[in-house]
Image (spheres, rainbow, N blue to C red):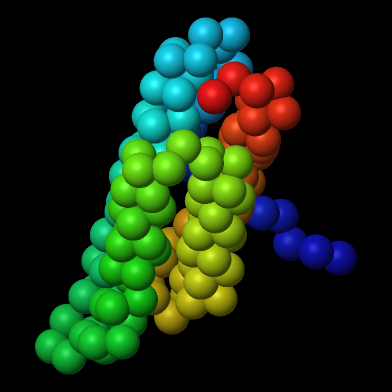
Length: 158
């Protein structure tokens, strides 16, 4: 018999979903029939996805500093910055070349990589018991939102 999932604090869940709202709104804007508006949505999507990845990296950095305050692992700190740096580089790519379809897939991959790392090391990092479930819900939401971009591309919105 499996144990029940950990209780998710309401504040964390609400704020997590509120944090996904700008990503969803930007993705929905890419469905606009107006090319310039859809392009603006793709840029906003890319920028906010990079912001989310930066936030998740900051959380990971904080966990590492809590795990070993006197001697944090340089490699773990580097890895906590990697998704953010990749997100910002990807955003620069989207600004220079309007290929949002590939960017959406790459952002989904970055969210997935962050999720795998969170799941595999949350306990060691000092995360609360509910954190992996929260990350599962929110990362799943972000990846579903990333699917809107291919739809807009198929509809030739930008």
